[in-house]
Length: 460
Image (cartoon, rainbow, N blue to C red):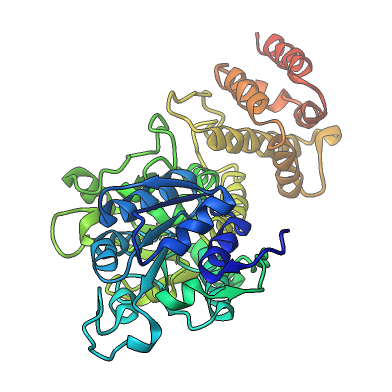
């Protein structure tokens, strides 16, 4: 790194570059030229706008599209006031961005001298529309405040951050050199006892509904696994749009504003709201979304767990980690339920009725059906006294088999579909070899197809 003298303004921009900022939106002016000298030195991409409000909205959009924060650089006074609207939008939607602003010289602040672009308190004005707002009085201050800002982008609810630097400080030389700040931990983790209470509610629900917002945007896979395990519906806010493909049969899309979707939410016996404020702008039909069942909330912002949508069970934590923990418990609970031979779930009636295949069946349902088949076959083997099929604990054996089947999801679905298309009577069901299905786990699809062909032959 060069030992040539640099100004505090250049140093600040070098810190941005060292910590992953690669794009800056803004307008150069006499009060922020030292920032722009830093841009030239670091080679960061600068996108010129015609109004500071556009700089804020562009940085907001960049963060939404890329998942990474961008910076906006403005002058003191009107530069700040122009960007406040876009900063407020970013705060409302939990979007990370960094606003750099100059102020008049430090000796004039709050003095009412009438200097160019004077405001009584810029920082206080910015503080109402950002997450953290800081004012630097030294190069060390600027470094420490930026460290805090970058940490805020990694922990808790993401919000814009604001740093202001007096005009005279920007031009001062500094011997400090840019550094990469240490990454901080992953934020609050869900408490296991609370997760278990939520899982118990979901596992017992007959009409579960998941409402997901922008706070779940990094948890798409976890949302998919849980909604399929529950066989429920997912509806998103506009900020959560895209969590599941629009073609997914459980996805109702960003449709909370429609009466039909609102009726489904009201009729649900358990609603899981994850990463959403459930704000009026999410459904546009009154001050409150009606719910007739129990409410579970997952949010990184602890204050959301006890607001006017007070949760019956509130999970404070990251959406992805919380949903993953829920899915693990719910899947085992659902597995144990479906493994009961008296539960009719479409694979087979407990009395040996015909097998059926539903056109809208989910992947996880197919695997659960396969498990149920294993359990029923094992139980019937015990009932019929077939010693070579008897296992000490059929339920535990079936669950272990299902966990292995999870490693081959597509093959499990295809094989299950073939079995379910057969019209087998109770006598043939009794002859299905539990051990054969367990063997399938270690064989490929072709090998299992041979097993299925043999079972078909037995049924003819």
